Length: 133
Ligand SMILES: [Zn+2]
Ligand SMILES: [Zn+2]
Image 1 (cartoon, protein in one colour):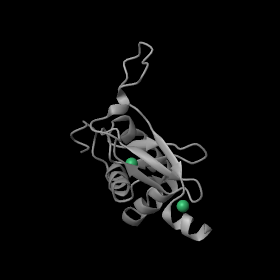
Image 2 (cartoon, rainbow, N blue to C red):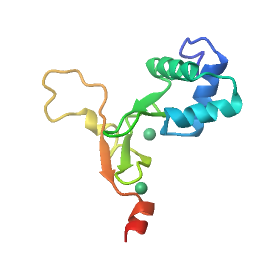
Image 3 (spheres, rainbow, N blue to C red):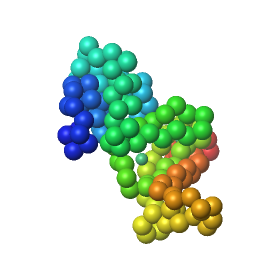
Image 4 (cartoon, helix red, strand yellow):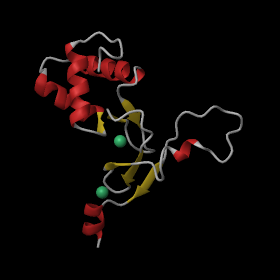
């Protein structure tokens, strides 16, 4: 993946990519933890830098629900959506509601060329629903 994006393959980048892939929607702290399992000497800064580079190259997508820290995932380019639990912050993937990226067809595009739609559904996850009732 790194070579495909014309990025130099470094150990921190590889470890960050692997960690994000293994833990979809993880925040930076969890990614640092997972990366350190593989590369104990890696610095916070190296993880931040790698995340930044990978996101810029389109290998990692960052999502930032209101009131939450940024979360990262390697499932990019398919315009999928997310559902967020208001109570515990858990995030799950939601495929586009109907067919192929219908949300890219805005009802009024205001003359913009639109290439991405970001939809966040908010609600309560099954665990939180169960513990509330
Ligand atoms: Zn929850
Ligand atoms: Zn996702």
